[in-house]
Length: 560
Ligand code: GLN
Image 1 (cartoon, rainbow, N blue to C red):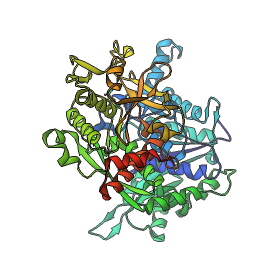
Image 2 (cartoon, rainbow, N blue to C red; image 1 turned 90 degrees about the vertical axis):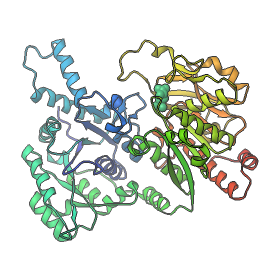
Image 3 (cartoon, rainbow, N blue to C red; image 1 turned 180 degrees about the vertical axis):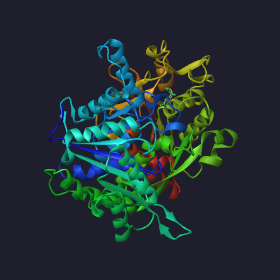
Image 4 (cartoon, protein in one colour; image 1 turned 120 degrees about the vertical axis):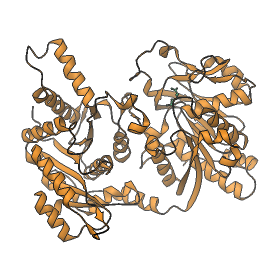
């Protein structure tokens, strides 16, 4: 079973959660990719849910959807954004999935009368998934980076750690590496960085039978030579592999910090990689551009969870990518849609150069979102509506332009007079909650006469979905005759995927989630062009002529 030439890196976390294990794991991937390695990732989540699809955003943050329709942990978003590769359902596994597999086999009689136990049956299934990820169909990888969710000491993660211990023994020390992310806190009263929590965390790991090979030490201040030696001595790690992971302004700086700290070289030596010299020029340029934008643009982001930014992780990152592509800093102004309901739209939305309405579920704050969509349509402010955001824009248009006063989505009012957004047929009989939405990548044909086409430069695109409701095609005629443009349609089902407004410089609503495909080295075309339109709006507003002029400028625009 053992894979001799494949290399496996395990990333665990200690002391506290939220140290950025996902970003650290993705950054390690960047260092290896820069050395010519083919890298894949695997995230283990020690909870019992089959996937995060049924969890509240308060519990889990964003649900990241892959091309093949898996609802996964948001760390997979970091992996895709940093490594510029597509993940699939094989790249994320939960305790629930692993038990489900084992129990299904047990019911089938596969275990031939044996008692089914955590060791070896659950641990074997965990190991099987690690081996499977490096040889995924036609895809063959050199290195798998395996991140274990949670913190050392959690009961839930024990089977994963036991499986990793066995795995390292099977593949041998030159083919496996354990990296532990830890915290070295600064204690104000003592005026010092303290190493004890790290010592205890590594000790706990050793008790389980795993010896850390390198430590990534999150800290606010410099980790001097003395401290590195002390940590190294007590944790049984050479001091050169005690890596300082000091706080940085942007997560995209982290691969460069790790490289400078010697982590790439350490991994090359430890794993005896046949690796070339690292090529990180693109990252260096990128980080430089990220740090010195020549202009700023203010864009409103309207959603339900304005204080829970993890719910909109990919959107926030997509704006950073689009900022780099436009040499601009995108300043996001968070807008609570419920607040719009109790005040005037203008009081809250004035001064924005663009507005994004977020995806979401449930009726809370919907009327505020609809009011916001009306405001930016009338004021000719650039708009991007994602999924629910697009649906709100359609409802607004039906009500206020087409005179369909009772227009709504069946999600919010099943008795609505005009269900311009309705449950699709395939969803009518669905009774299970988990994994039953329209999920994953679908094709879409784009009308060449549209802002969307100008952004993509392609007539057929593929984007990821996660929703139950759809534009109701019975209303196509009534809405398009008043100026709604349907510019994106699914070629197989005829479902409407993208709408625009005829009399607006840049108003795009998409039923899919473009944010899931934005990468730091390749900003998503819609986000890039949305930010560009917002910059244009800002400069024409400064010059005192907004709407007509913006429209004129737009006609001659080319996508970068
Ligand atoms: N609640 C809407 C639906 O299910 C939109 C979902 C979303 O924004 N992801 O269709």
